[in-house]
Image 1: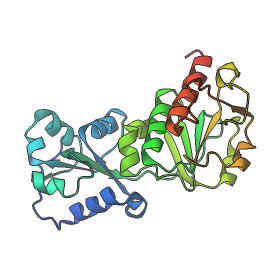
Image 2 (image 1 turned 90 degrees about the horizontal axis):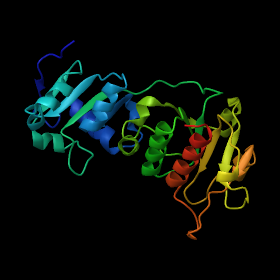
Image 3 (image 1 turned 90 degrees about the vertical axis):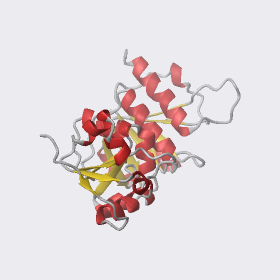
Image 4 (image 1 turned 120 degrees about the vertical axis):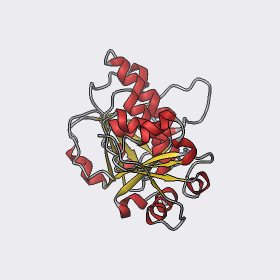
Length: 260
């Protein structure tokens, strides 16, 4: 169903724009407000392509004059049109995306016990978290479980780094380590202390990859729960890999062994 004609907003104090500023600046604001702000044509297109639902489009006047962005904005049931300078006032991007969607924050979902999973143990950098989500989606992992202390999964920076991966994954956040007891797939962790090389290991067809804090690594009590602990070869001699890079290597090896 085509959207109605856009509503022009010219006041900086409009309630919608006030909410968008909070969502753009506070990583956890979506938990309080119950809504998300997706900024930029790529994220908005990803939501539409993955079968998501927007509540509202917000588009700048210059973007509205472009047929492709106007058509994308009209996919939402309501459209707010704002002057370019006003759009900049709530944009979270260095160069604003000129179009965005407001959508309802996802409802809490239960852990799926038997699917390929990533467990994030206090991974704090939003860019790393988003990159891990993107790699998980690319390599066929469908669930991400974030323990307490991990960057907010639906924060603006994680959404941007995920590049749309969020909409193809089951995401559960704010978990205690005890909640992971419902997983039935074996856990696989990484450590520099083991001699078991990743590429020489026989990995489970479905497992839960355990990825840890950028500086401290995985908590020892969680690593002890792993069925396997492997090491990524680093013949170049670097001390360790960035957690997002390590995750991508592990996910790829798992896919390769599954014949993917």
